[in-house]
Structures are given as structure tokens and as C-alpha cells.
Image 1 (spheres, helix red, strand yellow):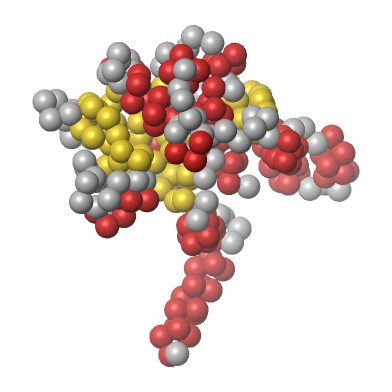
Image 2 (cartoon, one colour):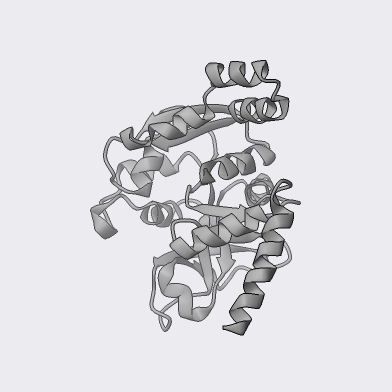
Length: 264
């Protein structure tokens, strides 16, 4: 499942304690990362040691905890559910429908490194075509601040949720990765419902930006939106082409399929 790749990104970025905000309809997520005694025993008896190592590896990825969001009140509310777990520490948010591929330096690791340098909240962004800005939250860079980190990090004055092409303040779109300071919880607790009558994280970050600096960091990597049907297919193909057991067969299939499509 997609969430395993997201957990692996977090672990590869040095994160050891992970909280998954879930719901009563998503119990299979908890089962997936749990220890499976019967399955492991069966694989051991059958001598399927490679499969056994894979299954054990999933349950040993990290210290994974769960909290249920009892009502679907938005991303901001989901993050607020983590307040007791986070306490007064900075933390990372990884959204479950955004998979970012960067084998050398995971997107989350890039943001954590940036946070360690400046010590304030950071939103992971990437540039999108101007005609696509209406699909995303778009950040408004400060005109008085010079971009740092080779132009990849800019101070924000705010952000706009799904603006028109004409009114968009930039082409930097928020891409499902954040490092946030614990003060965001106070903002979320007092945040009035926004779009869709939900507690919006973007609104709370805008409020936080009035008392603390907030930056956007343009991370390196290929981002896939698995909440989109075509995005899900592209992600599956991308990971399939990297998988040692099927990459050669999948590559050959794609080449053959391309030849057939050229003839049609």
C-alpha cells in the first residue's frame, strides 16, 4: 500500500516515532504494520525465508502509533488529533496521497535539514505550470526576502488556496510535506472552519505566520498524486520499474505496448 512508501520515506529521513491519523474505516492500515505471528510461522515452516524477512521488515520499520480522527473535519483537525502525541516538539507532516520519489535524498530529509538551519515552520513546495495553479495551495513569497539555499527556500507572507491563473501569487505549490512548530496546535484549536466547513491547515499556517516566520522549501524529487486515478497508475509504474522482481518484465511490456500503440 502507498502508505508504506510514505513510512519508508520518514524512516529514511531519520524519524523514529510515527503517528498515523486514521479512522474506523481504515483498520487494515494498522493490520499491515502489525506483527503477523501466524503468517511468519507459516513462512518459517515452509522455508520461505525471503518472504519472511520482508514481512518482518514491515512490522519493524519504526515505532508506529495510531490515533483515530472520529469525524472528517479536515486536514487541520486531523493534525490537531496528534497534539497529545507531539507535545511541545517540532514535527513532520506527510500526507498519505502524496508519494515523492528521491532515492538519494528523501523530500522529508531535505525539509528536516532546512528546519535545522532556520528553526521555523517549513512547507514543502514544487513549481507547477501556471495553468495548473488552480489545483493547489499556492504560496505568496515575501518580496523583501532574498531566497536562500540556492534559491530553493523563500520566506512567506501567506498563501492562497486554489487561486485562478491570473491571481496566483507564484507558481510554488504546496506538495504534502511540512515541518511544523508545536505552536500550530494553538492556531488549530482556535481556527474557524474554512473551505468545505473544515479546519484547514493552510488557514492555521497563515495565522501562525503572523507571529512566527514560515518558509517554503522547493524540495527535489518527483511527486505523484495517488489520490488521482492517473497519478496512481503513474506511481505504480514508477515503483514497478524499480522493483527487482518485475522491473525487467514491466520494461519489456511497456516497450511492446508502445509498439502496438504506434501501429494503431
